[in-house]
Length: 85
Image (cartoon, rainbow, N blue to C red; front, side, top):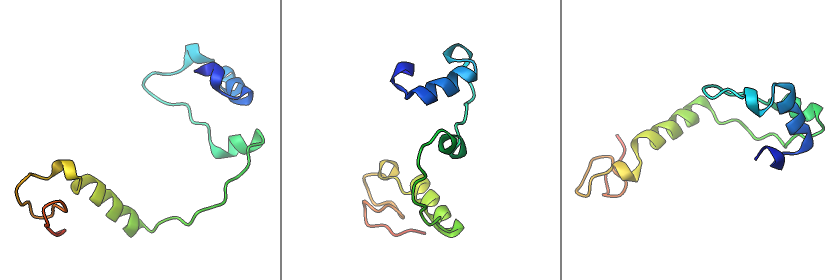
């Protein structure tokens, strides 16, 4: 997989110690600013959702998963016609 990365990314990894030094229980972070210094282009900025929108999305992801609904009617389950609390 290492060889599939672009040359500049492989060089960044080598500067950090290479595959041999990669941590198993943590991460090396390659920030956007580092990529920009390497010549990668900046993407157009997207508007950041409000904290309220982010919390709603997290709540929906955590509590409204169809796999968590029972087959019979469950309050709050979109598959069985329940409505959110």
